[in-house]
Amino acid sequence: MNSKTLAILLIAVVIIVTTVFFLFGGLGSRSISPPGGPMALPGVEVREYQGNDLSSINDFRENSIRGPQYVNTSDYRLTVTGLTNKTDVYTYQEILVKYPNYTKIVTLFCVEGWDTTILWEGVLVRDLIRDAGIDPRANTVIFTARDGYTTSFPLDYLMNHDILMAYKMNNVTLPAERGYPFQLVAQDKWGYKWIKWIEKIQVTDDPNYRGYWEQRGYSNTADLEKNFFSK
Image 1 (tube, rainbow, N blue to C red):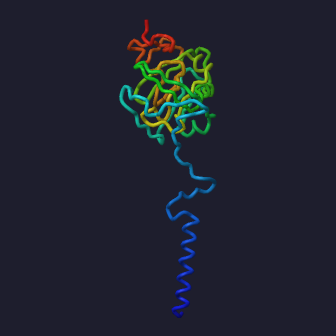
Image 2 (image 1 turned 120 degrees about the vertical axis):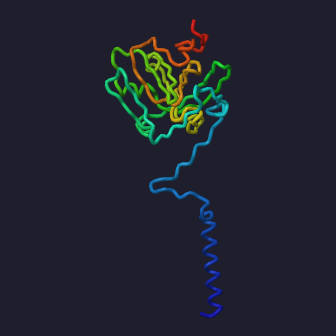
Image 3 (image 1 turned 135 degrees about the vertical axis):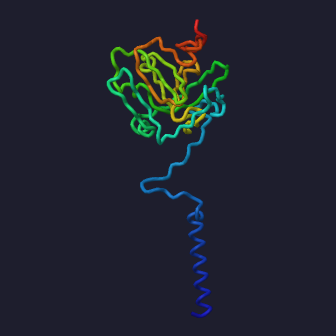
């Protein structure tokens, strides 16, 4: 091969490599889609939705009883039990796949004097309870968190309202500080009812049950239009 032929071949190689680089954006600069569809990217927090201004995820204040709980969803289980026809145990992914998801803008009002308005996304609590089957004697539902925190609600409140068990806020997956994997969106209730890191939903016939803050003098109903201290 003479020098002229070699030079032509080198020029051809450079042209081909340059063309490939510009067509595909450079090696390593873009994700390769897996078979069957594009690669999912993390959500980006939204601060406005359908004309409504939203608070930031960072506007929340840390006030949990034992600090943020860091839950590994590979061994996470949600149990729905008590006065039910059966006990259901779900993984995180099973809940996301099995149940329809809904979005709703709801404002959390904390007894400390601050509030945040968030776009929540999650599943309806009543769907989980209904699938487990409700014993006719049931009238109360107790929620238990990873850190031992508990609170309760009348069964009618959960079944007759669109109460979400949220896994996203402002279009991003709940951070650990905000209750990942699930936080209750207890609309029209004071913030101490918005239990985070939910691990158990127990259907009972005990309307007198008192959760963590309720045992310490807070109202069991926690209605926003009323004082949060029991009388």
